Length: 307
Image 1: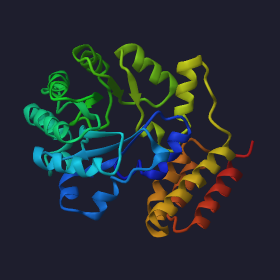
Image 2 (image 1 turned 180 degrees about the horizontal axis):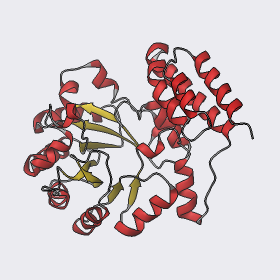
Image 3 (image 1 turned 120 degrees about the horizontal axis):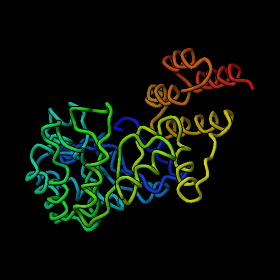
Image 4 (image 1 turned 90 degrees about the vertical axis):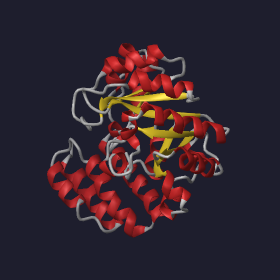
């Protein structure tokens, strides 16, 4: 979700029922070197609380230093990413899911961070590196012993990236192996998928990532189903488009017009999924330069999808 779950998206998701938010992936090394872009990922906004700052890296001392700097911004917890499969994170830097290949180092990182911060420290991991190294249970036990307060498990290996299937069984086995809360992740893209994840893994929470892209109302739908077994329909198209405009307005407020409009292109395309004329609307989204362009896309979507 790096480059996707920015402040604007997180705020909109929280307002639609998400229980908490986790910041974008921030490089511990970048933070320790006072890189402005990395530091910006540590900003905490009360509208997102409970909120966690998310760090990646592979050097315990640098991770500890970055965690102290992150804590100074006032997050409710620090999340250590051991699950990101992106080559820049997991291969080039040795962080993210590359840590699945070195459980002892992963545990030392958690221990180093826990020692220097007062807020809870959580860990996100994958099922393993590949089918020959599915070691989430082993790693979960180690990071729990090192002081992790909760563990998120994405039920895929790094080699899988986001390809099916999600290994439900390994999430269940992690839950059985540790005493701290376990958060299940992977293809939770509907209320029934969330309920199935709870039922089959015994997890304490579910995490929604890609399932929220272009449909932040998924959180209220999941909540309604879990609490009352009610299937809430998607909002009417007009309300969807107002939510989109609200999200992009926030992006522009937080990032400035040029960056916001470039990044809005993918978000607008996700909001168009499933609509009549979606291909044309996505093509238009690829050319967004201003709010006027977004309004034109919204008008076109409404015109092509009249009931």
